[in-house]
Structure formats: structure tokens, C-alpha cells
Length: 193
Ligand code: HEM
Image (cartoon, rainbow, N blue to C red):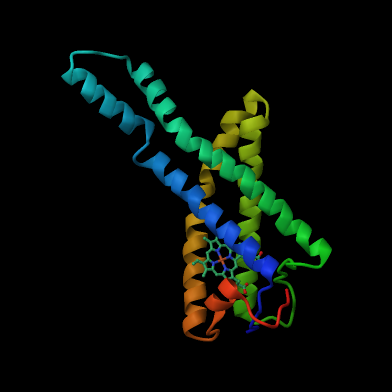
């Protein structure tokens, strides 16, 4: 199993990705829970009933979406930011930095192969999420619905990836690769990658 040293660029890119994906996940979490349009509409409905006022379900949902919008704008900003990071991640190898991980190398251990396949599949899924997200924002209207139905599936790879990734890193730290966490945080004198 190879023990890697992470260059400054690798570490900066990694933590920018880690933080922005975590924030993105938080916006999805808010949309599915506290700021869910049906929940918010129900809260407003209860209030209106108590105060002898009414709004149609359609109006309530429209209002709920307006309340959610400023939070959701951050999902979209993060999407643009991650698009930039994604382009940078795959442009950097052309400048000799942050090589793309190749799982097909024969000499790799099965653990390294598995890890590299996980990253590759993750990046393919991220690519699909980014493209569908950008088409929802900028593409023709008729593509909006089909793109949305693909885009919302992102949650099914993002959460498992983070869980697998974190448990893999923790297992490595406590078994065969002691110090991996401090190396991805503060690097090492010998820089490569
Ligand atoms: C405390 C949290 C985290 C720690 C300690 C951590 C640690 C690491 C380490 C040590 C590596 C290098 C593994 C290797 O040698 O191949 C790595 C790579 C990676 N991490 Fe994390 N990670 C964290 C959170 C995240 C999160 C939240 C994401 C995004 C959802 C993420 C995405 C990635 C990706 C995509 C790579 C591969 C980078 C590449 O080579 O292209 N990490 N992480």
C-alpha cells in the first residue's frame, strides 16, 4: 500500500472540495427538512387558520418557495464554485500537479485500486451532477424536468461516498497508514503528487 505525501496544491484543492461538498450537502439537508416547501406551507396554513385567514395551497407553496429561495441560492453558488474546482482538478495534471489517480496500474495493491476506483466513480457522478445542474440553470426549458430527475439522484452517491471515504481514511489512520490525516492537513517536508 503506497504512503503518499500531499502537495500544497493537493491539500488546498482537497479541503476546498471537502468544505464545499459538505456545505452543498447542508443546503440539500435544509431543503429536505426544515425548509421543505410542504412543511413551511403547513406552518403558514396553521397560522392562517388560527388567525381566520386563508390562502390556497398553491399560494402557500409559492410563498414557501420564496422563503426557501435565499437559502437555495447558496446551493447554486456552491454548484458554480464546485464546477470551477472540478475544472481545476482536471486541468492541474496538465501542469504536472495533482495527477489523476489511475486504478488500472498493474502494480497497485487491491486496496489502492479500490480507493482509486472510488475516486474515479465519484468524479464521474460529480460530472453528471454538475452538467445536469448547469442545464437546469442555463439550458432550454424543456430539459429542466428530465435534468432535475437525474440531478436529484446526486444524494445517492454523495452521502455513501463521504461515509466510505471517511471510514477508509479513519481505518488507514488507525492501521496501515498512521499519519495520513495529519499529512492531508499539514503536508510533509517531502512533497510530491
Ligand atoms: C475530515 C474529513 C476528511 C479527511 C480527513 C479526508 C482525507 C483525505 C485523504 C487523506 C485523501 C487522500 C487519499 C489518497 O491518498 O488517495 C483524500 C482524498 C480525497 N477526498 Fe477527502 N477527506 C475528508 C473529507 C472529504 C470530503 C467531505 C470530500 C468530498 C465530498 C472529500 C473528497 C475527496 C476526494 C474527491 C479525494 C480524492 C482527490 C483526488 O486525488 O482527486 N474528502 N481525502
